[in-house]
Image: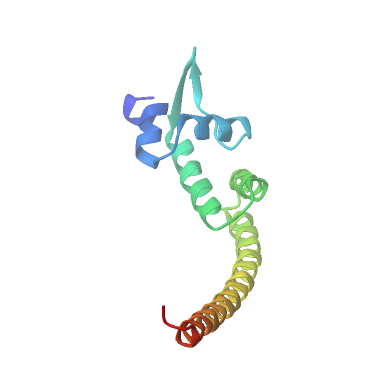
Length: 133
């Protein structure tokens, strides 16, 4: 294995904008499997690919358990058919949840905007009605 095939923990942190603690956490959760040379961790091309998918999954709100299960399906040997099918199921579920949250947030924003407008109007009316000093 050449030096080009592996990255140190610092190189991984710089490349993916994560902390060493994050990488160690993902390793402890059996999401990454760096080569250990004493205290040194060397991350392979496979680890880099997995980290990219972990970070994308986290950005979409997938649980670490979902991500781990989806990554584990890669090794099934069926040209990733099972992995892709399961990923689509989880992605559809997450999209439905995000859409629901988006709608709830839109309603909350509209209600808060209405309340702010009401409060500003009330304050303006109270200031007009107040005797000048």
